[in-house]
Amino acid sequence: MRLFDFSLKFNGFDIDNARKTLSKIQALNDFEFNDYVEKKKKEIISYHLQHNPFYKSLGKTIDVDNWDSVPVMTKRHLQRPLQQRLSLGYGLKDIYINKTSGSSGDPFIFAKDKWCHAMTWAEIMDRFSWYCIDFNSSKQARFYGIPLDKKGYYKERVKDWFGNRFRFSVFDLSDEAFKKALKTFKSSKFEYINGYTSPIVQFAKYLKRKNVILNTICSSLRVCIVTSEMLFEDDKKLMETQFGVPVVNEYGASELDLIAFENLTGEWQVNSETLYVEVLDQNDNALPSGEEGRIVITSLYNKAHPFIRYDIGDIGTLSDKGSIRKPILEKLTGRTNDIAVLPSGKKATGLTFYYITKSVIEDDGNVSEFVIEQVALDKFMIRYISLNELSGDMKKTIAIEMEHYLEPGINVYFERVYKLERTKAGKLKQFVSNL
Image 1: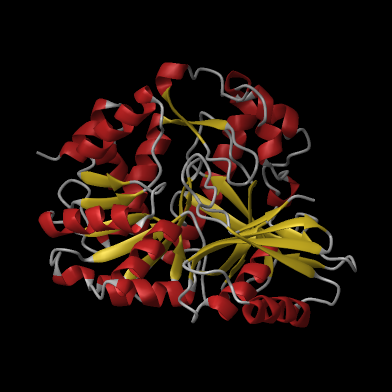
Image 2: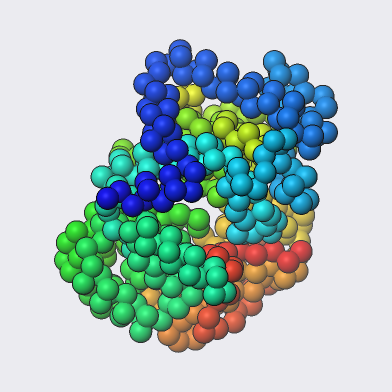
């Protein structure tokens, strides 16, 4: 029995027709595909201007024939009760409701109509099938957060059962927890690992310390798919070595869809079937491929709730090797709220600090995890977990490298901790600015 499909259908998501619709879209030739995208863009704008009072008030100056006239939405526009944002004719029984994790600092409740959510699942299942993963039969080792309240906890466990997956805690990354996880891998026929990057990296580090290659004890394992947090190239190499399988990078947003997925040739292929993805400058002008800017996304199917030219809060670059049919995400730099402001007034992506520190301590083998917090213009705190205290020389090297790559006058402080704070969803934020 195809339990995963059954669970979607039981909840009102027509996955069979969604798959057929996605297949028809993918069968279009280049000319037809371009027409399809332009038609869907106009359709979704026109629909919300006619049926959504919230969006109509936001888009008073829209000309449906001029995409540049469409305003950019942010999460702050959506900080109001869900009922005020829903399109006319949609009630709570007609929609899928969820809440973002708040990793951007602006959590909110969102909605999708059921057809839109079915298309979301068709897209996700299509991409996973590139690696021979079938949600109805392939067993998943899941490294995700889980609600700690009783109702939320058991709801997720039931979903895990229907999804043919076993969930490992991302809140306990101790050797004892990983020892139990390894025992589960030995006795289970997992076909893929899926979850947040940072705990999976920690599991790989544990395997390295124990000199274990995972697919030698779990021969059914095919692939590891990471999401929600930055994936660094050296971490990817470590995981591929210790797991013995390819590591695939996924980029998505719960309120939208799967945004980009690493294809079989190593490209980060953007979802062009159900989303329209742009990169804009600070004045909301579209940037040419190859230039870095704000990632702005339109959901082409969500009629219950508008996500039109929606600024997701990320910074990235589209490759000039891509096309409207097959856009390629060249890089994802970080979040717009991860910007560090230096004493001179210069700005730098917060992950720059993380890269610098990581490059210095990576070969040490002592530090397992760390985060960087900007507490003042000239003051940065590095909190880290390690077997031993960082040496004075190591701390000095990190401080020198930060000044070298950024500017003089930066003061770096260190605090060794035994546990790093994660979000309620279990994600680890590598850089935080308190300015």
